[in-house]
Length: 153
Image (tube, rainbow, N blue to C red; front, top):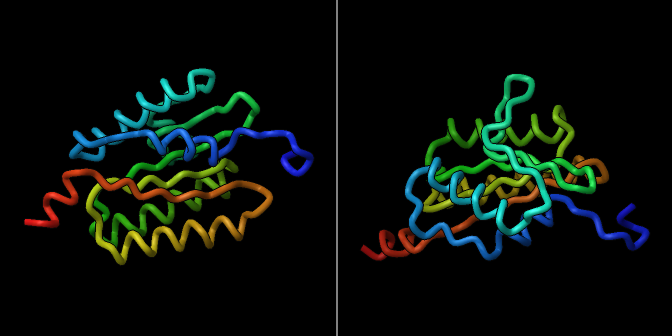
């Protein structure tokens, strides 16, 4: 149990490892996903990672089986610009947390609509609060050098 001082691997373990991830050369969602998958395998060599993990007619970009038993679905979104993709992301997070019964990490990469990015972060916080004690829901926005270059032009 986490409250008893025993360190547990969970969604926060994945987030901590990702702090050193640099997807600077990535442009497409598939590139970000491949880069993150390779990086996490090296950063957390004792954990088991799967790409495009399917269960119950839904597919997570990366699925992690942590050695302590916790499972984490990672959803990578690059360039979140449209409402349809935003709503799809919310639905995926919901399914992973409540139907798959796993921790969730939403990774927003690259330049995105600021309002959608903020709403996705707020949704992750809200869902995390709703499932508190069962799963952890985390959100991370990874900007790349390409974002700052295109924003200055």
